[in-house]
Amino acid sequence: MLYKTSMYIESVPNRNSPPAILLRESYRDNGKVKKRTLLNLSEWPPEMIQGFKALLKGGTVVPADQPVFTIKRALPHGHIAAILGTLRNIGLDRLLGPAGNRDRDLVIAMITARLAAPTSKLATAKALSPLSATSSLGEVLGLGEVDEDELYSALDWLVGRQTNIEKALAKRHLEGGCLVLYDVSSSYVEGRCCELAQRGYNRDRKKGKQQIVYGLLCAADGCPVAIEVFEGNTGDPSTVNAQIIKLKQRFGLDHVVLVGDRGMITQARINEDLGPAGLDWITALRAPAIQKLVEGGALQLSLFDERDLASITASDFPGERLIVCRNPALASERARKREDLLLATERDLAKIEKAVKRSQRTLRGETEIALKVGAVLDRHKMAKHFALTITDDHFAFARDIEAIAKEAALDGIYVIRTSVAKETLSDEGAVRAYKSLAQVERAFRALKTVDLQIRPLYHRLAPRVRAHVFLCMLAYHVEWHMRQKLAPMLYDETDHEAAEALRESIVARAERSPAARAKLAKRRTEDGLPVLSFQSLLAELATLTRNTTVTPLNDDYELTLYARRTAIQTKAFDLLGFNPERTQ
Image (cartoon, rainbow, N blue to C red; front, side, top):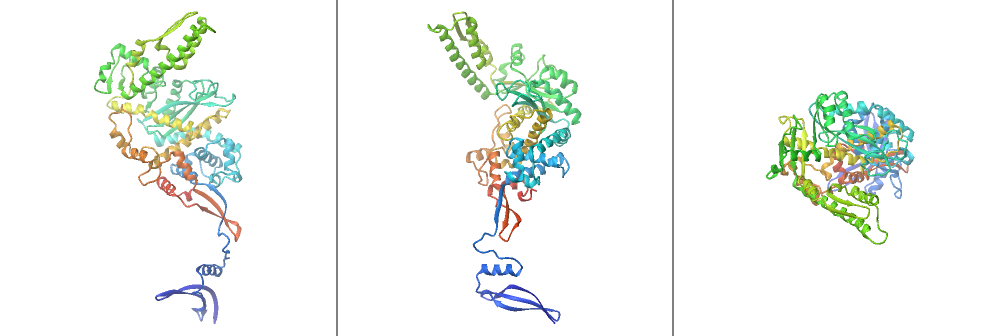
């Protein structure tokens, strides 16, 4: 008995001639599978043969004048994949909460959006929703429609988990006996209804604006671990005790070395907070204390005739180490700045002197003259360097040469103060630790400016403000890890050991490694790719699109296709260690 089965196209080798293209039919005869040739297609064009193959398999052939695929929508994807992939690689998604929790997914979306394109919560909600999406973020996370109320609810959920998340981050990045970097900054607030906003020392130079204050804890390598928000009129030293409680009680660290600047770790904080808590510390002396050391004979300026670092002791600081450093480059810069300010002050004071002496519209009255002089001195901060004579009808000024010389003698000199024994940490190590605070300053620059734009704040409720600041810190935590991986493509240093070897001493300015200098000079990486800033690299990654496509055969059936990666994108994802097409 004979049964027909199917038809197919077969290519048959033909010795030294092109293969024969045959249409064949297979059938079963008495239990054996046999085939026979129905047509020789060797003269057909290849595209016709391919179309015929598709027909035989039950498909439909698309006319030659129609595209095989049509892109319904193309969304920027590469930067989203890079951020989400890093967030998941470091396990931050697991620290935030269990999978399947919508609040957690919305928080992940806000962290990613804060890095990719920092905007308001309303704009973020629109960018995540399908109809108004500006990237693939909403699609990749499967969020569907999102409104700003959901985002605010997710912020409330996040701030309730802040304690546990920070504790988990501290367990990863801190350990007993380690250095912990701490510094404080502030950001201005729009409006007058924020519960935490107060007038205070405004680092943003926004006159008339209220602000909040926040303190950031980082590991010794600069990785952010925890952040805390305070009222805007809180002084820097007042925030230290809260960090001690956090380190000892919440993080369970019996002993760490807290590194803070000279305006934060004061004598009062040492006596009342750090000492009783049993924590060591590294800070620096303020200028009046250094001057007192010189006047008391504990600090001899002749120490620096042949060296730039010396360890001394002083009766005013019992049981402590004082490491005195002198940086000639810093001394020259301070002298230049002081001379510029002196000249600017003299120019402005000369205008007042002229106004007092002129014959018309003469400036008169001791109070009136003093107010104008005070405004000039306050603007340039040079009051201590001028001798003034003010009467009702006379004004004269002159440089105080003795005061200027007294200050100039200490140019470039700073004193590191620490309770850590020399057997535990060398003099150079103590200076290096204090200079590590620059990494916290770098974090503040990322938080406040182009990367994350933590300011201005529009939130009114205290928990929402704290949630917003914590969200920005988590975004910088992801950025910090991304920078470590992507350093070869950025202007960042990649060979720290080589850079340190070139440094004449720990007091001298940090040097770039040969690899970093070559990268900066050529603007090219070792493999010939352009060197980019972090934001420029994210913009380049964003051109890797996630495309929703359809075919003319079935407009309801959608396929997801990705643009072909450029050399820069391929290098970036190789460094990050994952495939952007699998970031779902």
